[in-house]
Structure formats: structure tokens, C-alpha cells
Amino acid sequence: MAAPSMGGVSLPRGNGQTVRLPRGASLTDLAEKIGAQPAALVTALFHLGEMVTATQSVNDETLQLLGAEIDWDIQVVSPEDEDRELLETFDLTFGDEGDEEDWEARPPVVTVMGHVDHGKTKLLDALRNTNVVAREAGGITQHIGAYQIVTELEDNERPITFIDTPGHESFTAMRARGAKVTDIVVLVVAADDGVMPQTVEALNHAQAAEVPIVVAVNKIDKEGANPAKIRQQLTEYGLVAEEYGGDTMFVDVSATQRLGLDELLTAILLTADASLDLRANTEQDPQGVVIEGKLDKGRGPVATVLVQRGTLRQGDSIVAGDAYGRVRSLLDEHGNKLKEALPARPVQVVGLTSVPRAGDTFLVVEEDRVARQIADRRQARIRNAQNASMRKRISLEDLDAALKENRQLNLIIKGDNSGTVEALEEALMKIEVSDDISLRVIHRGVGGITKSDIDLALADDVIVLGFNVRAEGQATELANREGVDVRYYSVIYQAIEEIEAALKGMLKPEYEEVSLGSAEVREVFRVPRIGNVAGSIVRSGTITRNSKARLVRDGVVVADNLTVESLRRFKDDVTEVRDGYECGIGLGSFNDIKVEDVIETFEMREKPRA
Ligand code: GDP
Image 1: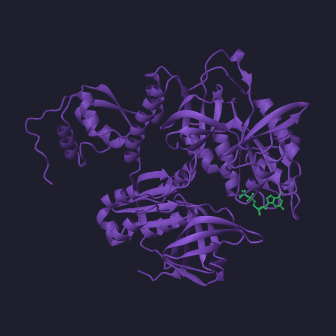
Image 2 (image 1 turned 90 degrees about the horizontal axis):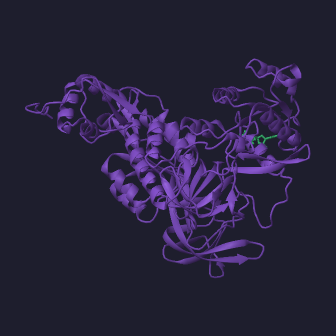
Image 3 (image 1 turned 60 degrees about the vertical axis):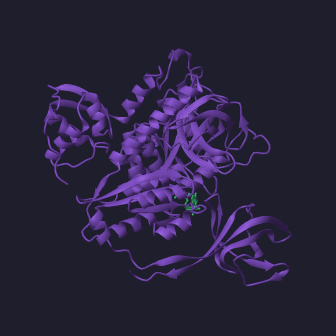
């Protein structure tokens, strides 16, 4: 491509004037602001050694480089500032309002962190059942990303909110996006294992965020447990137990034996009371943070939000990240409908038009129209910013030919909830990098892999990653026909390893999943002593008894690791049923089968090395 001629097109020099641009702006955006021709900017940048098109997102450094050349002081506005400005145009602010005197005390919000296998999940499960307030009937406790329990302290009923996704990723990811939700970190350390790398990492995260820590020394029921040693080890990291003259509360617990749980809750409250003044205005327009988002079969987009201020009510017009809508219903972690949610209350919000991401902030506005406009503007901005920032350079020597040619590996990530999609994307972006190859996520989303994802993948060389989701409808057919590489995962590190290996051109011969058949559930029969049997019609291939199976509902894998334990045609047991025939499929003890579900069967075969 020849350099466009500079003939006649002059650039308006800025003489040091300031121009503000959002992150990920294009040369056309800049041209508009400084009254230049986009083509002239393309040319100017070309002379500086960068070839970009007029509408492509340009990264911060390049914008500044260009600015210096034409004497404009280009200020790239951070997403947070930009959002603040966006809200200001609607006369809105995200934050506390009113006189602190009038605020009400609110419960602390707790995140559990610690080394893998030290018992975070078990502890969250055990704490969930400590509620002293009797539950309303009918509610089954579900995982919605956070829950609240009520405990007693000095004869007062005191609620505590727990973020129900253990680990550092969610904590850090939220903080990285400017959302501070955690008031207190419970650091879990297994008494039989001691301080481990992720213990230290968790501690660093908590300290960086200036969040007080309560240490739960777990697994004290185990032989070899040495709680005193944990206390001693942690002094090296600045956590000195109260009994040793420090100011950190250590509590010995056993998540499995349910020991020390009340003491832990007390320690959380005492730490909150001693070092934090947790209050919120319950009267202002409600605001808060999205903890988790997912697409639900019946209810559509569902987001778990944590109210931080104000009182969220049914019927409110809400905007959460780039999603908006009317709050159709508010549900707590027991599935009970709530009329309203006060600060520190996690609730599921039904009624949004799309699925927001974990860490997105939400606010309630006067009118639906405003919610929609904010959401639209954010959507456009997120798209731009992603285009700019997701270009990442990768340092790997022996890349395979295709990669060498393209210098870019494009990915589309689809997953079953926004948290995992983000975690996967973030982890992939951390793969080691160099100069001449880049890894780029061109699209991500919640839900099954659709035909439009494959269409998008066709435009470039794109690998589609499905995390706990499958391809829907004609997407598989299209992908197969056009040779689009679609890979399915249910474990994040496996996805990362494979992409890393692919980048290194070292993909090991491995077992590959070979699809055997699929059947659509037409009717569900309850069979005494056996459970639910799926009255199905085989849609492709053959269904074979004893083969591995998974259950897919609306493109989302509901259960993996199943086995076709029984297979019948009419009254007879059979070993296989072919395409087009009806049959009864029993999936052993797995009973959550619904009409229109798809049962896919497969086997693992060794993949020949390419
Ligand atoms: P996480 O990775 O930190 O979430 O750890 P998990 O909660 O999954 O627990 C890891 C393993 O430790 C599981 O096998 C648990 O059953 C076990 N475990 C957790 N807490 C205790 C405990 O208090 N005592 C004993 N003996 N085992 C525990």
C-alpha cells in the first residue's frame, strides 16, 4: 500500500491545546474534535510508522505520539472518568448523597479468600447454614453469587453479607474495574498446610485494597493441624493475632465439622465495628454493583446485584453496565420475592434487556429512556475500548504458519455466565507476550454459541471458545461446513493451556471428543425406582448404551459427565438407536431432564498429531 499523498491536506496545529478523547478512540474521532480530515491523520500516523485505518481504535501511546507530532495535547480519558462524565450529562452521580448523620447502619460485605483447597467453598457453605432467622417456607437456597445471613451479637440480630464466589479473581477483577464491594476479607488458611503462595497473594490483595482481614484457621479437626504455627507464620506478613498483641482476629474453625463458625461471625462483626463505620443512605436513588450475571432459560437475563446505597424496589428503572430495564422482580438467595432491597443486600434482578458483567455498577434512574440512553452510550464505548485494549502482543518463537502469516490469533469467548467469561478472557490475556503476534478477543458474551458468532468468526481467522456452553441450532453445521475451529471447555486452565500450546505450536496429541449422536427430549417419564427417563427422538448419529453423555438446554450445558445408563425402544432394552427413531434414555441418577433438552453422546478418541 502506498502512502496516501499529503498534497493539499493540511493538519490544524494545536499549539499545545488540549483535546480529550475516550480510550480506544479512532482517528476519525480525533479528526472530528480538532477539525481535521481523517485521511490527513492517517497519513501523518503513517509517516510516524504506524498504519491504521481511519475508523480503527488506536491505543493511548499512538494517540499521544500523533498528538505530539501535530502539537495537540491529547488526554486519554479513563473509562471511569468517562463514565462519570456520561452520568453528569444526565445530572447523575455514582456515590453517596445527603448528610452522613441521617444514614443508617448497614451490614458488612465479606469476601472469603485463601489458597486453593484450604476450604473456602466449604466454609461459605457452612456459614450459609448459620442463619438464626427462620427461613420463609418454600425457598431452596441457590447460588446467586452472594448471600446474607443473620447472626446474633450481644442479643442484637446482625446481618452479614457474603460474596459467594471464593477466590481472588473476582475480588481483583471487581476492584480493577473500580467497584469496591468488600468491607472485610476472611482469609482462610488450612491448619494442616500453612501459609501458601495464594494465601500471600490474597493477603496482598486485601492489604492493597485496605480491607481489614479476619483469619479463619480452618481444618482444625485434622490430624497434624497446627493453628499456633499459622499465627506465627502470618506475623511475617504483618498479621499479628490479638492474643499476641496485634490487632488481627484469628479464629480456629472447621468448615466440615462446623466448629468455630459463630466465633468467626462474631470476629467479623467485631472487626467491622472496631475499624469501619458502615453506613448508607437508604433514601437516595439506589445504586450498587453487579456480582454475577447470567442468561436464564425462562427468565431471560438475570443479574445478582449488591445494593450499596438507596433502597431498590420492584418497578425501578435500572441501568447496569450496558444493560438496562425495569426491575420486574427481586429475588433473594432462597428464591423468595422481595419488595425491596436495602444496602448490602444481594438480590437477583429480573427484567434487564441483556446480561451485565460482574463488577459493573448499577443505578436507578427516573425514566426508562434515560436508562436506555446511558446503556447505549456505554455499549458503544465498551466496544471501542475493547477493540483498542484487547490487542495484545505475544512472544513465542515457533508459531505455526497460519499464525505467522496473520500475526494475530483472534478469539470469540462464549460462556455460561459473565464471571467465567471475564475470568477466562483475563487469564488468556495474561499469556506471555512478545512483539510480533497478538492475541485478541473480538467478541465475548453469555449464552450458547450462535450462528451469528460463527458468522463473525468467518470474517477473520477466529477460534471460538465455548465455556460450559455449546453451539446452538445451525451454528454447528455452519462451523463444520466453513471449517471454523470451535473448542469447548469446562475448566479454565485447560482452555488456557491449550491456547498457550497452540500459540507455541506445540499442541500435544490428546484425546479428542468425538460426537456420536444427539437426541431431542420430547417427553419426560417418571419411572418408579429408576427416576426420570427421557422420551426422545434421535436427531443425528446413534445413541449407544453406556456411552458418555451431556445434557444441553438452550445451548447451555446443564450437566456433563453423564452416562446413558438405560436405553429402550418401546419395552425392550437395546444397545443402540439410530437417527430418526424414538427411544427412552435414562441418565442414571441424573433427573433434571426437561422437554426440548438435547442429549449429546460422545466418546474420547486419541487425536493424531497434526
Ligand atoms: P477451596 O478450594 O478453598 O474452595 O477448598 P474446598 O472448600 O473445596 O475444600 C477443599 C477440601 O478440603 C475439600 O475436600 C473439603 O472437604 C476439605 N475441607 C474443607 N474444610 C475442611 C475442614 O474443616 N476439615 C477437613 N477435614 N476438611 C476440610
